[in-house]
Length: 196
Image (cartoon, rainbow, N blue to C red; front, top):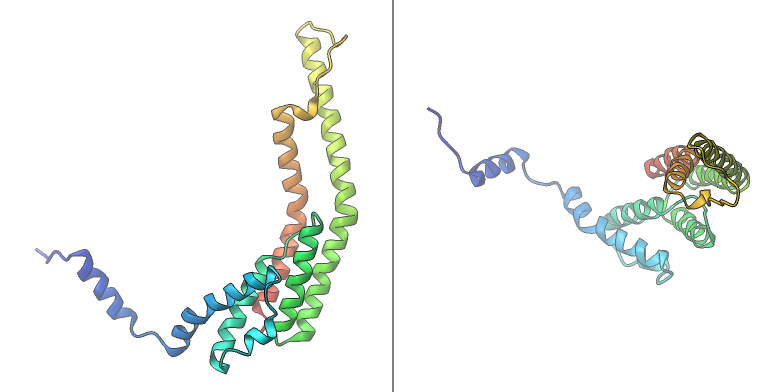
């Protein structure tokens, strides 16, 4: 029969197989979180990125900027209100500061701006139209259900917009409408992440 090993022994064997961490891996483990913290402070308007980056040596800056970039890119969202618009602008400015390939960055950010403009203009119209259509459809179905049960609509006012089924259907429709924009936005954010 084979020897039974403890969990500790198995873990130690796995660690031995992995080997020693490289200098870059150690630097990334240390400075990536530093960059993430700086990005959070930057998004709160507590700091400026350039002076903060000047506090790190050349080897660390690579990982600090990667951490900053990761957080800023994750914070780019559809412009649903003034707060998200301001946050997006701040994220764009920060990304332009930390990324090296300024031309490519600006090209991708322009594509994202185009998506945002379309979302604000056409997306809002589509959303209103979809909402009105869903509401009318639900109203008709409720009236039909009442007639089939032998009831009349005389004097009865049902607020369709407060019905749980309507709210659930509207949530699904809204997710579907926004999903079109989110898919393209995610692809562009991925392209931003891949740039130096």
